[in-house]
Length: 375
Image (cartoon, helix red, strand yellow):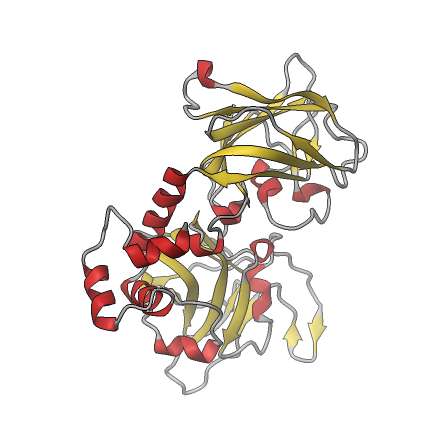
């Protein structure tokens, strides 16, 4: 068995992240920061501006005591647990140090509007090493929507990874069927039998798989048994429909799949079937109605005997208790400024009343005005 402790990259382009502003990108474009693939280097690839680097690189400062910065909108707003500032291949031109901050805002503000919001320091000014994946742990437990990387004084960064736990906005999911295992909705792989070619969290990404390694693929099994992955749902729910795609897996899909569910995954006797042993085809999107009416918090996807799965979706509604619990977590973990904006905007509270509610957090019951729009 392989545990899957790796957290998703909240800033990843595959989850909808975008680099929305930078004060300078003279030598290399800011968008490179959130590319999914590992950085590469091709020597002697000179453009009119100099050697081409796979990252974000600013010009050298001359007599200017300032610093350079870039702002990233998280594709999956959530709780940031660590930040990786990767300076791969930047050996004589990496920044001396960096600072990472975050903010949380309503809607889709323009970059210039972010200046009006409070930024919280996640990583204090810290030294960087060149050609290194510099990793910084984050202790702040609030939900953020944007991060800002400041490099001191200038230089190049290959990749920025913002690892954490997605925490969706319950207003966007209220009273609709949802993909219960999507990374964007808080689903996640907790364990798997094998991830030799690519990890199972890949199959929980949004959109269609782009190529074979964009899904979950195991090594060729030579012994008895089969491969499997355990997935934690966004919350307790009764799954109704499963979708499984073997797109791009033409000579290496599973022969068949099956699906189990449980509310107590540590108890082997608690698992029950949602989908019996069912054959699947190569390079095909499949849809299956599921049996069972009991809520589950985890599912186990078994692939027989091994192979690749491009995408896996599990459709259903959260139970009322799970939806309330998710909304409470979201509201209690919003930065104060964002929580006040929610209550004065969608809920119609005065700023004074909203400030009073926010000051009383953590709350164990949703404010009545908020409960009406998140259920």
